[in-house]
Length: 86
Image 1 (cartoon, one colour):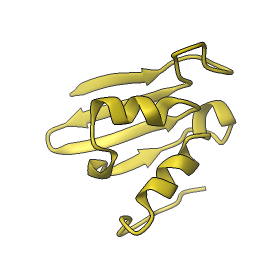
Image 2 (cartoon, one colour):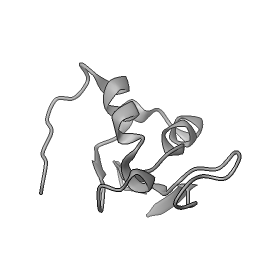
Image 3 (cartoon, helix red, strand yellow):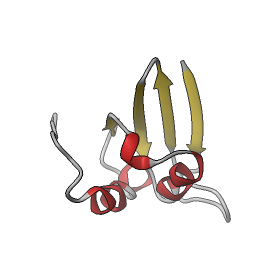
């Protein structure tokens, strides 16, 4: 397994940084854990976001989920299956 830290600042990113975001890669599976403010741009710097197999958000605070809306907008029309757990 490989873990790439996309961001770790909270509750707001420092200049050039990002709030929590982690790319988890194991075998051929790629998972985004958290998608805080700024993490989506850092994700694009290391991989093609369209290759993600899924995303997990631990809780819906902006410093953990703000860029989820950017990711969703970028993927419009690309999402085949979405499962939401509440």
